[in-house]
Image 1 (cartoon, one colour):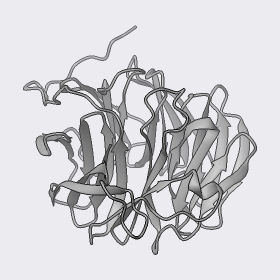
Image 2 (cartoon, one colour):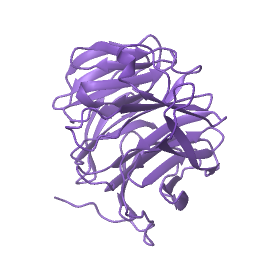
Image 3 (cartoon, rainbow, N blue to C red):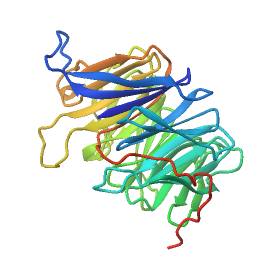
Image 4 (cartoon, rainbow, N blue to C red):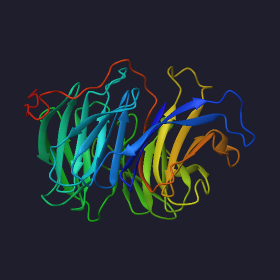
Length: 341
C-alpha cells in the first residue's frame, strides 16, 4: 500500500505502508516509510492521484507529473494545459492492477484524456465554460463516462468513449467535489458543509448530508459508506443508505483534514477479517492511518503516522500491486483521436 501527498511548498511525498515487527508503546502496528520527497513542481501542488504502480500530480505550473511508485522515480511531465491543473483521476478497469486512462482538469474549464499505457494524449475538451475552472472530476466504474463540477456552478457529464461533453446543467451553487460510489449507482456532490447523495441514472437527490463545518475531502468506501473530512478536523463515516452518520473519529487531526484515502488489504471479498484502513492528511503536514473498525466502538489511535512538516494540500493512495513499469510515450505530444464506438 502506498500513499502520495502534495504540498503547498511544491513537494511531492511518497510513503509505503508496512507492518511493524513489534508494535510500539503507543499502539502503532504499521509504519509509513518514506519512498521519496522532492520539489517536483514550480508552483504549489493542488491535486494527486494514484493507481497500481503509478501516481500523478498537478499544480499551478500547468503541468502533470508522472511517478513510478515502486522505483520511487519521476517519469517526466505532461504539458497539455494552459492553466493550473485542478483535478486528476485514474481509471482502472475491474480486476486489473494497472490504470487504462488518466483524466486531468484545469482552471480554464478544460479536461484532458490520456491513455495510461503508455501516457499518450488522446483529447482535450471543454468540460465547463472557458475560464470557469473544473473543481473535481470522477470516473464511473465502467470507464465510459465522467462527472465534473466547476466554478460556473454547473455539473457536467463527459462521454469518455467519444470524448465529448454529453450533459451540462446548472446547480445554482458551486460544488467543490464530485465522487461516484464504488458501485457507480450513486454519486456525491459537496457544497460547503453539505453533501448531496444522488442517483446516477437520473441525478435524483436521495439524501442531503449536513456536516458541522465545510467539507474539504471525501472518499467512498464499501457497503455504501462515504468518508468526509474538513474544517471540523473529524473523519465522518456516513451511511448513504440511511442518510445518517455511521460513526465518527473526532479530532482526528489538530488542523483541518485536506485528504482522505480508503485502503484495504482485502483481495478477496470473502476475507471479511482483513483490516479496513483509511488514511488522512491534514494541513499541518501530518498523515495518519486508521483502522476504522475500531471507531465503531471507541475513539481509535492511529495505526501509523508521519509528519512531513509541510502544508499538505491533497492525498492519494493505492493498495494495488503491479509488476508493470509505467512509462511516458515518445509520442506523448501527439494528439490521437478518441475511439468513436
